[in-house]
Structures are given as structure tokens and as C-alpha cells.
Image (cartoon, rainbow, N blue to C red; front, side, top):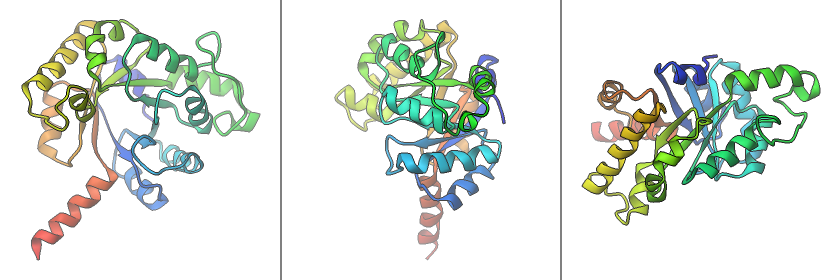
Length: 250
């Protein structure tokens, strides 16, 4: 398994994608597609907590790094997905440094954080707690989503918190918070994204980019632009692209 935390620290590239369909066949196909990491999306899917552990089991069995994107910055949910075997979390709607502190505390045990100790899949059901604690320290990865105008206003404060391992911008939600929902070509939005990325460079925080539609040219451009944590599309868009190509051929 690639150590995404280490790759981010060394400013090295990793490419992943999103799981929104809780079907083992889809998950296995994604795992066999040479992604460095996969993120189970709890925020914008119908995936249940009961399915998360099974999906994580498949992802880790293929040696792919397992992320979970949360529904919100909820310490109880963070604890549950980490106990189920997630090694990284992607936290939506981070607006302040205090939001980062809350997520970090929920990920890690004392003295690093405030997470309570459970004996679940991550800890081999109680057999390997010490091994798990070492694994968590080495692999645990915290990615924050910058997707609200309040976060843009607080970006220096957010990036001064060195417990985050990287960030990814959510352009759709960011545009909505600016009163221009979905207007991704708006100059105000582009200026805000430019400001976020410039402050990240100053603070040495690795940046992420989500290419929603499967487009290899966009992927190549994201690499040229220097993004190191790239999310390439998601299962439903990859599937839909193939269907649309078929429909156009008729």
C-alpha cells in the first residue's frame, strides 16, 4: 500500500477516485484500475455505515489506500470509520483551524488526539492494538475540503495548522457559498481558487484537485499545474461516460 501521507510530505503525485456505488464488483474493478487511493463517499451517496467496512475490506485487500469522505466533521462518525479500517479521512466544509483540530482529535488517540479506544476491525478485534497505533501514526492522513467563502477568508489560519496533510477544493459548494452556484467560470470563483492555491504554496500545504468528468487531457493539465493529490472522476461518472459514448454511436 502506498503511504499517501509520506507522498504528500515529499510533494509526490498520487491519483485516486471516488466510490459512491456500494457494490463489491464496482469496488473491485476500481481497485484493479491502478489508483493509488480510493475514497468512499458518505457525503453524497446512499452508502451506509454497514457497507463501509465491507468496502474498506475490499480496498485494503488490493493494497489501495483507503479514504472515507465524511458526511460532516462529526467526531462520532470519524471514530466509526477509522475503527472500520479507514486510514484517511476527507473532511468537508472546513472553515476554521478549530474545525481541523476537531477532526484531528477524533482521528488520533491521546496524546495526539482524543479518540476513544475501540476493538474493531482496524485493531484486529483487539489482537493488534499496538500494531494499529503504529500503523495509524505512519499512515493516518487528514485531507480538508476548502469549499466555502468563510474558509477562503480564513485560509491563512487554516493553512497555519500543520496537522493537515493536504487539501482539496470543492468548486461547486464554494461557488454556491459565493452566491454564484455552479458558475465555475466566474472570475470571482477563479480568483478565490487562485488565492487558496497561492496561500497553500506559501504554507507548504499540498494541494488537491478533483477532475469530475473522466478526461485524460484534464488529468495531464492537473499534473502540469503541480497538483499532487488528484481525484480522477468517480464511479458513476466513469460508468455514465461509457453509456453516453454508446448512445452517441446509435
